[in-house]
Length: 476
Image (cartoon, rainbow, N blue to C red; front, side, top):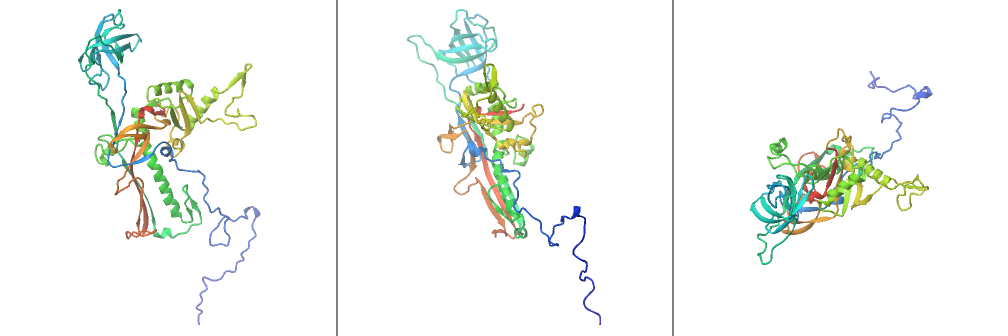
């Protein structure tokens, strides 16, 4: 009778021990088919530190709800009246002259009879003082000069004119006409930002040997936890970077066609707004006090905000430190001495602090490193060489505090931070930060999909108030 026990497969007779050369006597094939286990580090090593870059808007702004597809606000115009592109129809030494105002956007001048004006040649700087005697049309006015020598410049010379007062004879009527205040109206529209993470039910039940962790404290041996939390962190970063980088979709562009037609796509992000109606330093990084004096002089002509925060990349941060360090050195007996930074003058027994957190030059400037501009997966990975980096941004000066604007939702003037986010919300729907789970795994039981889908959504835009007080540092 044949044996029912088959010869193959059979039992092994080979010895488990082998004699091998010592130089190769190392175990490298660790698997669950042998009796040896590797010495493992179960916890992930966080080699990139905190990988999130969102923090900028939390530091300088606020969030508040909005009920509309469009947000409008009014910003005050200038109080005093000045025109910079005026030409005289009279010859040099004429006692009177009629000027034509050709400034961009001016359709009706705010100059009235009886007002006194200063008129200066834009090229040579010579000037006259005069009184307005007539306003013949919407863009012309006639003056009589106070100087006996008459007009100090030639016919058709480009001049700047501003009003400094008025003067009337005794027993005459009052000022003819009045001026109406005019605001500058700005607007922005929210955009919808979405993301999603999906994992099937089987993988949710799979235990791994690596203990995962993320920046927001999620930990465990379920790998999907890491992916879900990283999706959440990435989405939260995009909530900020979208507000920084967003641009409106131009009419007839490809994006406008995808997003619903002209006027439908995009939004006005911070960089876009400051580029359009703010101040731009085109030399990359200012490296000398004279260059900072140029910036201070420009701020004098804007809102003159006392305190400002400069969010910088590493290059601009070092340039500011180096500039301030050279100003802090001194000599004694003709010999250069060590710089005396800080409260304790950098004693030789102390670690030398070569960094600065701020300085005062006309205004207070506080310096803060901006991770977004340094992160190699964001703007930190862009070309930083001046010769080839046209448009590369090195920093942003943001005025501190708040400004007063007319809020159309509230129907009154309100204090608002210069930068703040408006998100769509009502009593029935809050779209500031929505997250919900669909599927039939992970606690969700609302579909027959054998998976868990975590959905993220926000609808928001950023309002950049008083952009004329911001300074964008960039190349080109």
